[in-house]
Length: 525
Image (cartoon, rainbow, N blue to C red; front, side, top):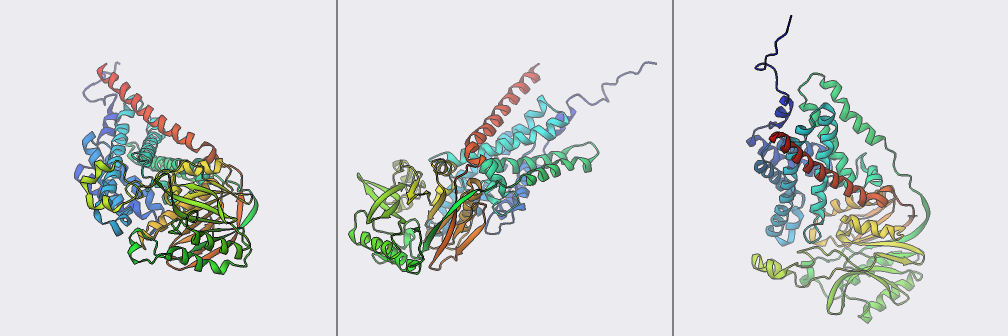
């Protein structure tokens, strides 16, 4: 007996591909999900710091963009990005008002929209060239995670040096996933997080029975990630470090309320309790002195006196320096009555510390651009000081977000990291806690203690495993004096972090292009 094949009732060969091409939710629902995704994702970061919500936020974004057309996927991603950044960086509006806040959020949302478009194309194109279960559950989520990581990398480096705030990995400083950054770096952790979420989404999309068994796949991934041991931190000694928070009016717009000398005098007053503590170095924050001690004798004498009272301890402080008619945001090493070394911030914040292409941008917001009266020049010197045999890596404010700057200082032998910052312009917003969370991840990533000292707080000394050794509360003067662990080993993240990020991004973009080309050829054939 011969069985006749009925083409009218048999599913076509590409039935699974067609099904996975369909949107999970209609456009109106996707836009509503996008609006909600931002606040949920932000809640995974400090101040709230409910880290599992970062995974939920990622999932909402993926569900909203799957199956969309190119234009609508970009729109959904843009709305999701806007709902996230308007909340996440709302601290930028505290003193400058809504224009910079909205402009920055809009720019970052354009990147978010472009990333959503790439992810939508991956969900559409990849199953057309490989649609088996392994591809759908095992490979496609990896591609999605690589494209998410690519978007974070581009946004963090372009234009004008980028804005790396808001990478999903930065939500995990207090989570069980935090130790992974020592192995794979910040970008690697973002990749792992998105991959886990994308696998879970794909498992739920599978039409066949056996959901319970399939859910074991993301569960195993989570267990495997958490089973990776923390990097074995190796400490070879300590340095007794004093970090001083003066709680002074150090904001850009506090200048009218300050008397000449208030900054350095406030730091000097807060430093008096460390006299007699036998410290090896004294660390002051970014913008700790309005006077450059290299050119102002009174400032030089004040620092020399404090150093002598503290047993000759060198002082590392932030100030502004002018050289060759250029202005620099500088950290100087003051010792033996003179500047022994200095570091100029390599990546000043665009539209904060300088205005790139000022002639082009000024007509759009002349009053705001005019507020930035001086442009800091990017530095070129290395970011390490030899402080009586202790190699200290120097980071000024948002340097702590720059992967390359951090890796470079450790590559140059830094045994401890000094993160000098001035948070005064952000008041009591989430900015300081977000920055401190990033600092904690940097400690784990590099296996280095980090002395994070702010003009107004919250300041902290963090150990090489990410543990908080001591803190000074925000908006209180105080000094931290601790025997800070020193390390010299290199973590995999420091050695391979840049190469790993490049591999992830290159593979993701290359695979997407190949999938698009092969899929188009098959459709023509």
